[in-house]
Image (cartoon, rainbow, N blue to C red; front, side, top):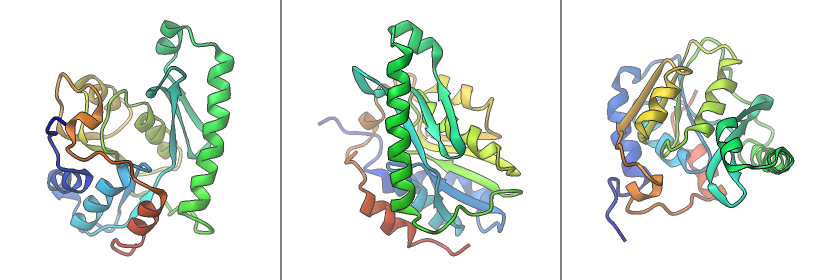
Length: 216
């Protein structure tokens, strides 16, 4: 296995956190991890900054023949982002996209129950939100999250990831107030190539991490 740029998501989160020093200890800051892979990195960022951690629920809409490739994403609040150019280029029928969106909405609802239960989303209005994922390839998932968060009236939204494609980071700057990446390789490829250990994060790991950060 090729050696990645980061040992694992914890290592990546710690290195990312050091680039976010300006937000340390601020009472207006909340860190949101994108489940599942973004949560271990987000937990390290929240721990380092001594600010609250939560999850923001987003689901990628994967291309039918290549599910790791995002053709869009859905997020809390009914937000849906589609990459119409990619969908047209690959000739994906709109009915197939709709079917995948319905399936992913069911999974988003399941995760809401798993991760939050009866606990509601924290108050975002007027807060500075740092949204963390483990990497930014197409950025569709992160874009959906930022669009959804904007509807809740935050003071600012900062996108943060250990690694991201330069073009994706540039595009996300149109939606976020700031984009922070430790590395922006021109040859990103798959995000997992930049990690020695990119083992899938489980629901149980997310629930455990949600209980181990600074209080709101």
